[in-house]
Every structure is written in C-alpha cells, then in structure tokens.
Length: 121
Image 1 (cartoon, rainbow, N blue to C red):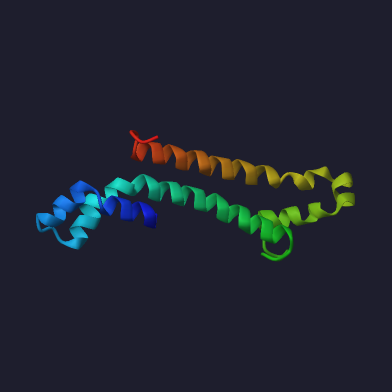
Image 2 (spheres, rainbow, N blue to C red):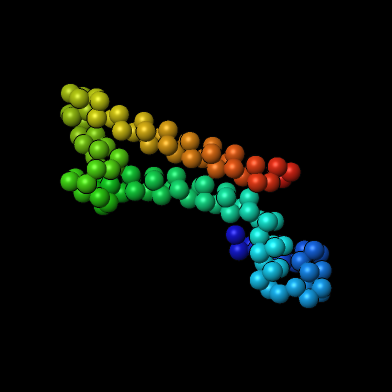
C-alpha cells in the first residue's frame, strides 16, 4: 500500500493538482485515493481469509481460543487424535466451512478488485 501510494504521488496528474494549488487533503482524497482503491480492496480481501486461517490454526494447536468457546479451530482440535478420527470421522467436517469461507472471501475480493479497476491486469 505504501509503495503504491508513493508511486501514485509522483504521477503527472498529482503534480498538476499540487501546481494548481490544491490542498494536500484534496490531492490525497480526490486524486490519489481513486487510483489505488483496487489495491486497498485487494489487501483487505486477502487479510480477512488470512485472519480466519490464523485463528483456526492457533486454536487447532491449542494457542488460540480454548474449548468452552466455539471456533472452527476448537472444533477441529479433537481431530488431532487419530483414534477419535477413526471412530468419528465427522469431526473433520468443520474443516469444510473453513475452506469454503476462505475461498469465497478470496473470490469475492478478487471480483471487487476487478470491478473497482477493470482496466488493470
């Protein structure tokens, strides 16, 4: 984000707005922000699934939420015991919503990014 912000800051239309006497806030919000809205959306859409996976992984290994709290990682924590998995394979089912949610958030964010800036690859 920071690198893209500095790259946009040196573009000709930003320099022209500054030379025209526009205030810093106007240059940032009116000229620069629309240029990297797609990058903001991409970063946010990749951060949310990462946070979900981090919480699930930490709870799965016992460093996150603890068993009275309901979480996908806590639900999957029982799956660490191979004997429990062999007798009750349905304890692996909470892994399916994790995968579906992470993929859905990634696809949704990708679609939002493409909609925000359809001309960039």
